[in-house]
Every structure is written in C-alpha cells, then in structure tokens.
Length: 157
Image (cartoon, rainbow, N blue to C red; front, side, top):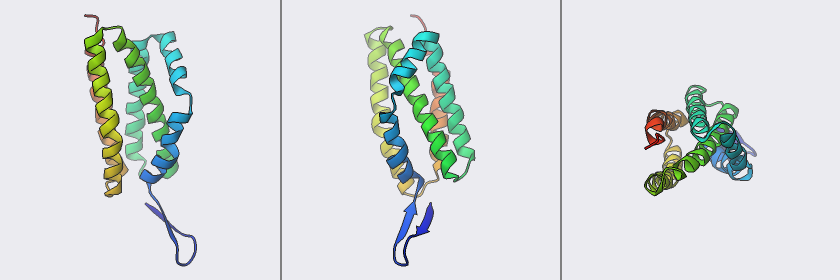
C-alpha cells in the first residue's frame, strides 16, 4: 500500500488490488490474446501450447512472490499471468473438446469454479490486507498442480 498526499486534507491510497482490478484486469479483455494464443496452439499443438502457457504462468507467479511491493514489476507479472491464463484456457478448452463430452464438461466445470472463486477470493484477501505474495504463492501452487495433472488429463483414452 502506497499513500500519497494530494492536498493537505486529501489522501490517496494506491493498493496493488486496486491497481490490478482497475488497470490490469481490463487489459485482459481488451487485448486480442485469445486468437493469438489459439493460433500459437494450432502451430505447435494444443497440448504443447497448454503446457508452455501453464509453465509461463508458474514462472511469472513465482517471480511475483519475490519482487516485494515494486508496483511496476507486479503489474507486468500480473499481465503475464493473465496472458498465460488465457493461453492455457484456450488451448485446454480446445484439447478437452477433442476428448469427448465427459472431459469437456469436467474442464468447463472446473473453469467456471475457478472463474467464480478466484477473483472474489483474491480481491477479498487483498482488501483484508493479505500480502500479494501470498496470492501469487497460491497461484503458483495451482499452476504446479496443473503441470502435474496435465499429462494425465490430456492423455489419449
């Protein structure tokens, strides 16, 4: 949390959660990342691309744990995590679609739960004063679990 005094009576608080919500999160929806990462997946293969994007998200999350409160580094790291999430979602969705209805339904259910709980829990914890490094640690653990489970989830059955 960084505080600035604008005038003698007004105080402006800049928190990582506010910056992320107001600056970085909208960029995820404005940038045409979906078609770009989808084309990349078509070029190198869906499974390969999904693994690469998950690994990128893991590396970015781990780096964000250790940068402390340097806001510019956290913003860049968060943007990389968002692009990695978009890339893994597009390519995993495509790969799951080829595996049949049960696999696709399980993937979409997990994606919906993550989409619903992730931002709510993250913003709540940031507002409660939990350090952003803890959120990136949880994210890194989730990416690690994805990397461990990816070969089994996308194996030919």
